[in-house]
Image (cartoon, rainbow, N blue to C red):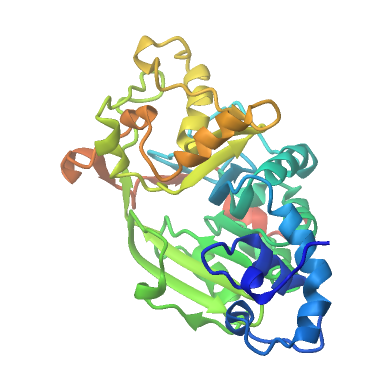
Amino acid sequence: MVAVNKSMLFNKENRSMVDRETYSIWQGMTWPSYEDFIDGKLLSDSVISELTPLITKFIEASKRPNRVILALETMVTYGCTLACKGCTNFSDYKGHSRGNIKWKDFRKDFKRLYERTIVDSILLMGGEPLLNKDFPNWIKGIRTEFPKVRIVILTNGHLLLGNTWLIDYMKEYGNIWLKISNHVPGADWYDQAVALVKKSFNWEEIKKSQNIYKQVFASKVEFLHDPKYNCFLEIPEYDKYQVMTTGDYGNLKPWKQDPVDSFKRCMAADSVAFNDGKLYKCTMNWNLQYALADHGQQDDSDWKGYLYKGVDIHTCTEQELDAFVSNIGKPHKICGMCPAASQPDSEVMMDHFGTTTSKINFENYYDKKIRRNL
């Protein structure tokens, strides 16, 4: 057994998952604050002895390569209730070639990723994730099998009134971050959905200076936290969208900019995409292959060099995985397909409000006969 002492426990330079996981799992008689725990306060030799088996377990587990992915994004569905012009995930065109993804199909890939990396949070997105009837299994599966991973959910709010189970899950499982993006200001269905979530928790406002997450397009953002359930509520209004490609479907073209310059404009610089067992630089790069193929552009020479095959988590080497993770938060040559920071906003930003149209009759989703309160 590994000899455990305070210098091993509380060496701040070497802390990783060991102390965080141990603190979360330990059910000792004395329960100090996390700050006291990592500082070594309030812990007697007898408590250290009690913790030793747990700490030993995590010290052994932490010998795996320290590959940290702070923000992982994945698509649970490719359909959407809106058709937002300029959608970065290409969910706005009719006849999208991909549909809903089942949790059981994603699980085996995520399990392997979790074995080879440390995932801090996972963003479940679409399209509109609440279109996926299997979505509850995603939340239950992640929270029960990967309990330390924060779940972030991005929804446009259209289907929240018919899916109030999500509020129940936030309270049952905790550590869930709900982002309700406002694409149609003043819409009754949006205001009602936000009001329902707000009254269901005891939210405390988080000041802008405390919000370390970058907001790119939102004209304003409301950011709230409920300490009892450790849940977050983020309400951004996207009045502007970045024009990610030039041309229209069937004639999409890359911007062909300097990758470093383009990366300065990136709206998800610290995030990576994970779909079909493969890691991608971003969700746009992941979806590009389908948007081009669905419109007969899969062999377009202008896109050569930008179509990235991804890193297969099941077959890639340790060196390949290390290279990918080390590039997180840094520019890559494929970033040049996006607009550059040096380009004027008038050239690369468009008004978003007023360009959004619905693909469905919202009122149908309020009918009790088809409401999905799971």
